[in-house]
Length: 306
Image (cartoon, rainbow, N blue to C red):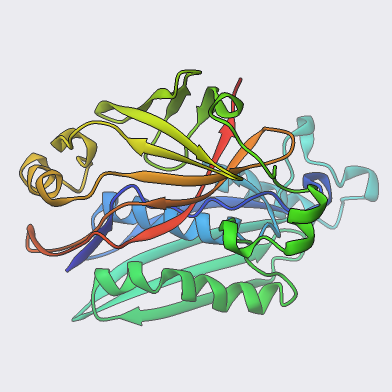
C-alpha cells in the first residue's frame, strides 16, 4: 500500500543562525533495494530531506556530490595533509557531513536506513527502522527523522511556519510578520513550494500557479494579517498527475478533491509568505483509491522572486 500526499511538503521559515555558521550536509544517493522502485525512493529521499531541513541545523547541499565528499574525506585523513591542506583542491565545496540512505523490502517488511558520516573523522551513524508497508514509511518518516536528529543534534528543534505558532511578542512588535496585509502587498512573482513552480499574483486579485502538467488559476483575498490564495477553477486531472499517479487515478481525485487553498502571513520585509496549505491526502492500494481525505493541511512557504 502506497500513500500519496497530493503536492505535500514541509517548507519551514529560515533560522536565526546564518548559513555560513552551519555545518554543511551533502545529501548523496538513496538506493532503491528489492521491492521498491526508483520513483518511490526519489520521493522518500525528498521527504527525508525536507524534514531534516526543517531543523535548520545544517546548510544542505542537495546534489550528486557523494564521490566528491568521499574524496575529501580520504584527503583530510591522509598522513601527509597539513592545516594548509585542509581545503579541498581547486576550491571545491567541503562537506562537513554526508547523508546517504536506502529503502528496500525484506519479506513483508520495508527497511528504511539513513547513514550520516562526519567527513573529517569518518565517524558514521546508521539509523534504521522497519515498517509493514510503504504507506507506513511515508506516514512515519517525520518521526524517523526526529529520532536521528535528536541523536546527532540534541539541541536542534524543527521550525514551524503555522501562523498560530507565531509568538505573541512577534505579532505586537511587528518583527516577524505584518499586522495588516492587502492584496496589493503580495502582487508579484513567487517561487512556490513542492509541486508548484512559478506563482504570479496580480494587483486585481487574480493569479496563476505553474504545476508540472498544467497552469492553475488563482484568486487572492486578504483579511487582517492573513492572505488567502485560492484555486479559482474546477479541478482537472493534470493537477494531480505525477510519476506515481496516472491519468485514471488523477481523474478520480480531481472529481472528489476540494479546491486547494493557501493561508499565509507576510513577513515584514515582504520576501516570504508563510502559513499552511489546505489540500487533499490520498491513500492508494493496488492502483485503487482506498481513502481520500479532504481535511488534510500542511505547512507551506513561498519565496518572492520579484
